Image (cartoon, rainbow, N blue to C red; front, side, top):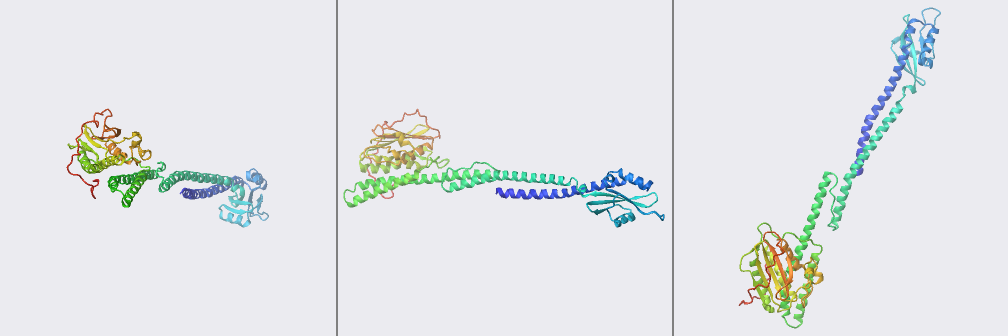
Length: 486
C-alpha cells in the first residue's frame, strides 16, 4: 500500500508538472524571441529619419555606425537604384538576406524575418525622401534569440523536480501512517490466531484504522471471555460429577472383598483421577468469572435449596454412620444467587466433607439471616484445614493439598473456588476457621443488597444450638437419578 501511494502521487504530480512546465517553457522561448526582434525593429527604426533626409553613402554609413547593431556589423541598408542613368543600387553594411527576400519586402512594404546563416535577419522597409522604399536589414544572432531561455528552463525543471520530490515524501509519510497500523493489526490477528490471547493493537493511525483496532481489541476481549466461560463451564460441570462419584465410591467400598469389588473400586478411582485431570486442565489460566446471577430478579430460597440438598446428603451420611445437624432453614430467605449455583456450592462443600473425612465424622449446616446478609456455615468434626489461606487461594489448594485431614487425598481446589465465586458475586466472601465440632468451618457470607458485609460482624458462630435431622424415620437410598438437582 505504501509504494502504491507513492507511485500514484508520483504519477499525478509528474503529469501536473509536465502540463504546466512544458507550455510555460514554450512561452518563455517565444517571449525571448519576441524581445530580440522587437529590439531589432527599434534599432532599425533609428535609421528611418536619416533615410528620409538623405541617401548619401557617407552620411548613411555614419548613421549606421552610431547604432548598436551597426557598430557590431549586424546592420545593413539597401537602397534601390535611382532613375538617373548612372546610378545603381546602394548597399551599406554586410548583406545576409537574399536579394529575393529584399525585393519581396520592398514590393510588399511589410517587415519580414528571414532565416540566414547563424541566426535571423529582420528586413524593415523604410520610405525615402524620393518616394522609393529602402530596406534596413538587422541581423539577430541565434544566441540572442534564445538568450535566458536555458536558465528559465532549468529553473522550471528544478521547481518541478522539487514538487515531485516533495509530493513523494508526503505520500511516503502518509503511507507509513496507514501501513504501520495496518501491519500491526495484521500481526495482532496472526498472533491471536496462534493462541496469544493477550495480543492487543494500539489505537493509532487514521480514523478507519483506529476503529478497526478498537473492534479488534473488543473482539480479543470477547474471545478471552468466551474461552474463560467455556473453561469455567467445563471445570464446574466436571466438579459437579464429584457428587455422584462420591456416592459411587462409598457404595463400592461396601461391596466387600473379591475380584469384582476390587475392579469396581479401581474403576471408580480411575474415574476420579480422570475427573481431577479434566478439572485441573480446564482451570488453567482461567480468569475469575464475574456475576453469577442470572439477571435482575434472579435468585432462590436459600432454605429450600439447603433442605433439598441435605435430603440427598443425609441419606449418604446415615449409610456411613455420620451425625448430621441442620439449623436455620425454617424460614424463607431469598438470595441473589441462581438456584443451580447455590446447589453446586453446597454439593462442593458437602462432597469435600465426605471425601476428606473418615466415615462416622459428623457435620452440620447452619443458616443465619442478619438483615443485609445470609450466613451459611458448613462444619465438620474432621481433622480441619491446616492452611486456610492456601485453600482459599485460587488454584492453590489443588497443588498444596490444603485440606489435610487424616486419610484424605489431594484436592483440585475448585470446590472452594466455586463457593467463593458464589459469595463474591453478591458482594460477600468466604472464610475458613475451626468449628466447635473440632474440624473445619466454612463460613459463607451472601450479601442481599450487593454490598460487602462488615468484617466486624462476627456474632453468628457455629456454636449455636442446632436442630438435628438425624432422627428421620425413613432412610433415603441413592438411586439412579437421585443426584444433585442441577
